[in-house]
Amino acid sequence: MQISTKVVYISLFESATEKLHGSYRSVPENQDPEVLVTGLVNAYKRHTGRFKRIFYQAILLKKPVVSIAKLSRVTARRSVTGQDHFIVQEEVYDPTLTAAMRDPTVLRNVDRDNFYREYKDVLVEVGGPTPQAAILIHLVNDLNAAKVLGIVGSAISITVSLVGAFAF
Image (tube, rainbow, N blue to C red):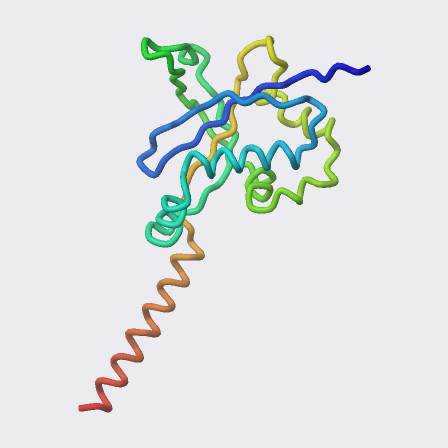
């Protein structure tokens, strides 16, 4: 019988107002990366809610992306309220996890050991040191949505102008 070691990671969700919400998540070390990311996406969806996600994407023209956030070592302590406070020193965009957030199947054939090695600062054994980095899901401006909105707005404006010119 093989005992499965658990790993823990910190997931941070940044709201549109730049407020961070964090939680510790643990998963078996032998878990496939696809399943790990699916759990992360489900946690993000539970935290954000459907209405907020639609509002962010359709009205604010923002899209969620994933970054690896280097955490300050001196601030990852429990506060008086019992919640951890995190200060992000540096964040680096992660195209792999961002693509996996949209479609977790991109990680289906990824070598599990290489994946866990790649994210060794994020995924640490339970009972080990506090992770030095976290998975940060935050919002950025969606340039493609802004371009589409600009094109549609221009087309409507031109159409209204032409109709107005010929109608009167």
